[in-house]
Picture 1 (tube, one colour):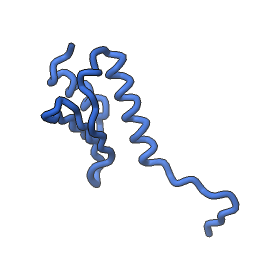
Picture 2: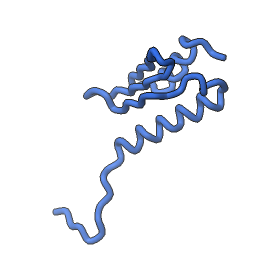
Picture 3: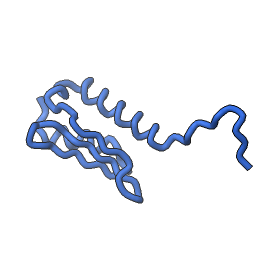
Picture 4: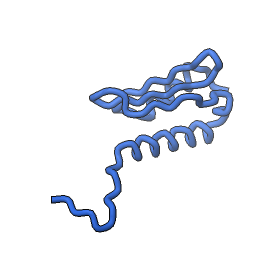
Length: 85
């Protein structure tokens, strides 16, 4: 099992060049915050750190967070028939 410092380093480094902060709560859960130039871009809380016991689990978490980040920036879908002038 990785140390808390190693886990934080892997997660935070995976979002470079954006700034990322990984915080461990008293209940041993993690909160991950990814920042853009204007402030917080994504915040995910309640991540169970004890479930991150393999490189695959860590990779899956990072992939999910990146997908959440991508969807946070996706433009709203246009309705059929809607016209924008």
